[in-house]
Image (tube, helix red, strand yellow):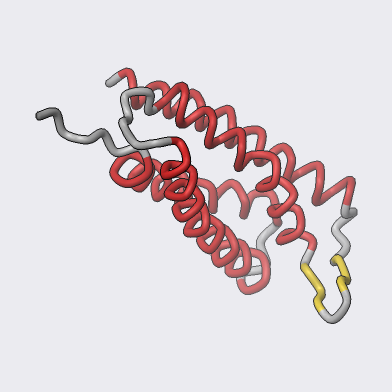
Length: 140
């Protein structure tokens, strides 16, 4: 296994475990499986729990990716952060879509749905982070 893939798996595994743990705690104990009512908008507890986890794991994921996984990148930090945020927006949409599908349409339990969703999102994230966000520029 290439070192970069191992580092991605280790850092991503840590961040994924943290994300799922935050989701579980937020969904079951903080939100108590109740929707959040904000003005004219109601957010389902599984979506709110996902957003709480995201607020913590987004910055951690960026710094682990930049300084541990993709160290040989030559892209400036500011540009990387913008690219990382763009990819993470895609991940947000995937998370939202799959959670809505699994929980609201299929009526699956929220935490296992989050775990299954994570499989799809991690695959998308690795491919896009490697080939877009932290792409190594060719040597001249």
